[in-house]
Image 1 (cartoon, rainbow, N blue to C red):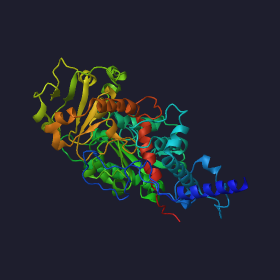
Image 2 (cartoon, rainbow, N blue to C red):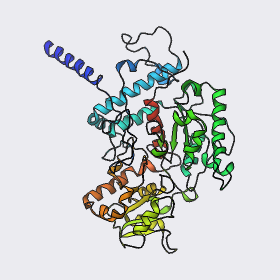
Image 3 (cartoon, helix red, strand yellow):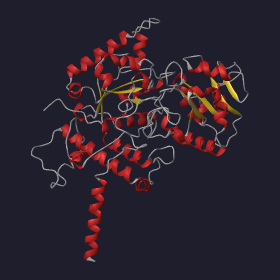
Image 4 (cartoon, rainbow, N blue to C red):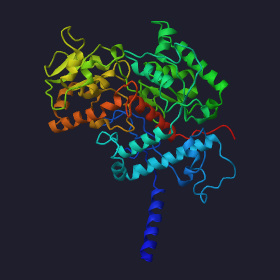
Length: 484
């Protein structure tokens, strides 16, 4: 019995050594290369593949403090295992916070390695993500739980209405205003009034409102937007130490307007270092998926979801139309689509503008595939509308990093077609076997909750998915402090 005990202990120690020396891939996609290739995407993946980023954490990382502030939970664990942690002085709030993040990394790493065990362990939670639409559901879930436990956001109070602390809450840029409003007036679990306890710092200006209030119509001069952003960063960097401490790496902005990336050029550190949450997630225009977040474009007419989309028909409902699109000739892709398919095939219901007796959402609800071509910029609200409708999205875009692709496997619930293959669109979609189509449609139904804009927000909805994307980038970044 004693020899058996010694053998078990030895085996356990060996297992631990193996686990803690394996390079960790945080929701590992296809062996993510830390020096990500940002070249043009392939058909299988319209954006660079990287799952919840790469997390390489050594054992020393778990006890080494780096910078930024702290969580009250972590104070209770500081003196555990004193044989490993030898404190010569009391840790600062920043060090406590970084130790909390190190524990979160270790927990997520454990879930990444033992994905089956973790999934089984969390089955008592009805919210646990399950299925092929997730790259690693157990790791995603563990990361989400760590976010709920630890993540704190400080919202700067500087700036005046309407450009700061407000934003559009209806129509095309709904997501921009709704996120700002929730961070300002809700999000009690995640918001902190103590900047020393924050993991990230939110600059709550609205690019959409900049365009409305300080841009001169038809001038195409966006210099005033850049100046506003430059001035805002200057104010917070003079008043607070946090921007200068990390050169903006733990700060974020959010914009759904097409000109969000251009406005961020008002400060080079914001553009190059900060987390930019953008609908216009175009890698050919400087979007960096290692630090930036792709924001889904959600258009709610009047600020509300159409009653037709609240309860879409079940998956086995007949959909008489094979494919559908209706929209104006914005950008280079849509004219190409209409040139080849408008009025040419009854199976391909492609319109520039719908006749007055036709209803847009009814078409989506009755179509198997919903075509989602980019307009002037890469994002399109049709992607989310298709998901709401239970219609399989067909992504027609170049250089677009799809939202939440850290954790969602878009190939499991959408079809991605190179824009050069638009003339063969019907052939490509017709070649999809019925069984595969059913699986794609089931995937659409599974991911629907991640794109729902609820008031108040619910677990795993679009508000929390955005926060999780920011959390992922923060937990993978260890900003260097300028202070000794």
